[in-house]
Image (tube, rainbow, N blue to C red; front, side):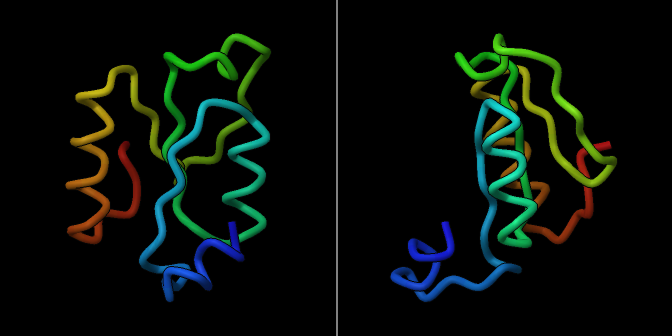
Length: 79
């Protein structure tokens, strides 16, 4: 993720990772970027997610759009 961010000249504050597994959550945490976990991907079915209060959750594709809009306006979390 950090290599992709460097290639895009994107900083932590301008990066939102959307994923479906704890691997994705850990990747976002390690990179220090915002995280949106989707509940409809294959990774979500692999086990429990251990989320913090500052990570977004999207149940549908439309919810991802809502999260992106909220995140881009500076909202801290989807809660």
